[in-house]
Length: 172
Image 1 (cartoon, rainbow, N blue to C red):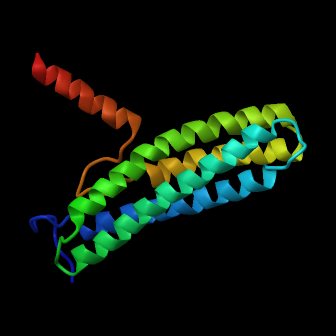
Image 2 (image 1 turned 45 degrees about the vertical axis):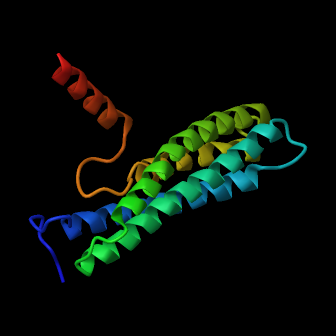
């Protein structure tokens, strides 16, 4: 059963399925970031504490992306059945995961770069930290920014700045 954009409360299901796919890709990338960060987490190598923090941030990011993926998957199933039950709760949970993902990726990026620099960029641990750094960024872009919504752009910094600017302009 498919619904058009005009069905009240139910978004275009093709669009929603694409968002779910993006979040799933982001969750996979976050899982790869966690694997790279965990493998790089070697005691006795300079910068161990930073790489440990990178690993913890990757876990938090994976949980955030996983929560978003679950929210999209569950809500898409509801929308396909013609219902909208649980949307507000899932949206709230997804929005919290979205916001926490920003903190996780910032901590993960800083700690991965610092750990990589202390271990030596060309070392095995340093290289894996660099890979984890890149995977965390893309995991957050694909999985963390796609909070559950019925329409509109993802929750990226430029989107929030455009909204803020529009609000300021409307107050003038």
